[in-house]
Length: 130
Image (cartoon, rainbow, N blue to C red; front, side, top):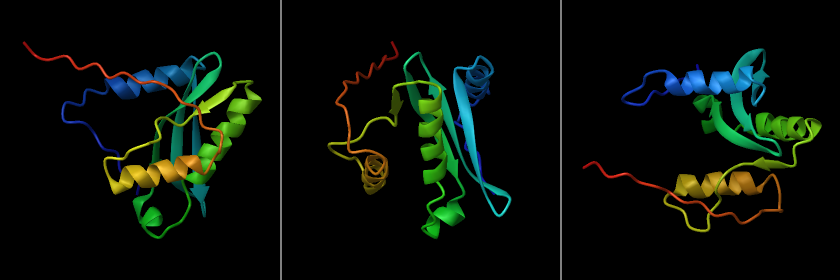
């Protein structure tokens, strides 16, 4: 019931790369079940001091019913990061401006885990085809 989405030119490379992170103990997967059915999952990638929220997936039908199935895997991931003595759980960019209502809703969701947000800089590099 959880659908995978593939990019247009999907080759399997990104899935293999993520799996290898887990095999090398540089990442971990948290899965959530409801009534013995898989309903949510989070892939976390870790460095020496920080865990980065890589990707998450949730059953859309339950999300549409406003069931908070995405909270547990992230909360458990934060606890697992702490258990591994990692200092930061990085949920990624939050605002201050949003390109869509969905981006705003995601930021509100992320802010619900902590009022201790840090400012970081991100640079996007775009290579133009010649």
